[in-house]
Length: 560
Image (tube, rainbow, N blue to C red; front, side):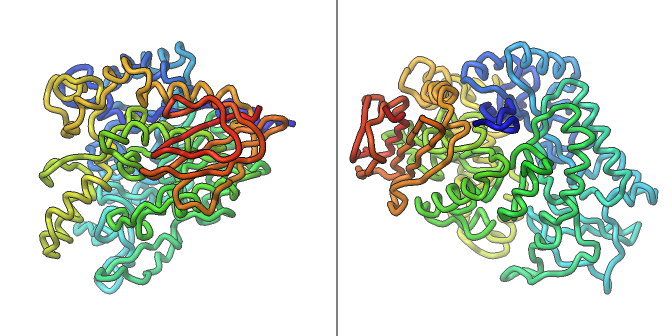
């Protein structure tokens, strides 16, 4: 029996994530834009997705590529700066039968936002919109570290006060304990809901409450700063804020909501999107992909371990088995490209690897989030100059590790190519023309050098391409009720090569079997014969008993 809660439209939907700055440049100024997205809507629709999520395009100084909002009601000039373009984009998205989800940044604003500018002018009302605090013994109020390097407090000499910024210093945190701030955010959300937006992706939304004494923490090795996440991530007060947003906006406007969250455990996750007191519809968990690094340090990579991957993914599937819903993703604008990070990006295995990743992740319980270029198997970068990078983290790390620390420049260029956020932000590769067809002028970020081998135009012509595999995958997924509603049961779980599970609902059983290695492995299947409905090699029709999976092979099959 399917509960009414289980029938929400987003349960069987698939989402396509767009990073607008890098998607398509319609006016040839080097930046992707709103009109560029609109022109590519037929392509997006052809993938079989139901929702278009667009990263921030609001007015911004672009210190963090749009996640530093200066005005929530204006489009930044680099994205067209034209409300008519946005109106056309949303209307055309709806005409094609898709939903439009807005990326909303509400934990912080830009320091160029009108509220913060008034705060800097000494207006006490607006100073209370943020966290301004007096020095303690002539220093910052605490030793909290910023996510992007350095300390999380910035001194303002003419006020003789510090303000808090968990992220970049140009991203001051909003004070959600001030009711006026919450009222302002609700008005922003209502404005866009009434404009026709169908949902929100809520950026860094689990940081809304900070313990008021801002206690110092144990410093990181070799640093005076330490991450104070235990004092601001997933605090119980956040649930109160979520409840109010749900009562006043999400529920009344029937919006799809996905919360980006980190530093979270199962109990906290279930409170956010449990069935009894719904706050948000689904969670976008960074914990899904943090298993291949030392803690939360992306520049301290660990060798890819299939067992660690299974522990993370299956662990969260179990945690959310009866409560809530997960966003399923293998890459995004904050992550390196998955085919390079978790697979094999050689010419021999890249396409197989990219297709297998889709088969492995997107038959799980949850909502698939396909990031632009993932459907092509776009890879990590090949830059050779530190100046080619734009990620706000890169200058901090380069200064600390290379300039001051004397570490190898080559080592850090390699880390930036394979682990920085720029890896997911290089221009979309549309064809083999200059700049990959993204723009006719030099793009804001350098195009990956392999665009002549990996692009939409080439893959449209190849029925065995990753692009056409993703189309088939999303089509097959919608036909299988067990993939939407069924339980997830791992098997062959002791293997350090395979990622296998069954999905079971009523009289239907579906299995997904995947080999993450470049050599053959054997898998013992559940009892019975299975009809293959999806295969990245494309030459298998039926399987039973024990199957030999070839390098990076992925198969989805239905029990006969």
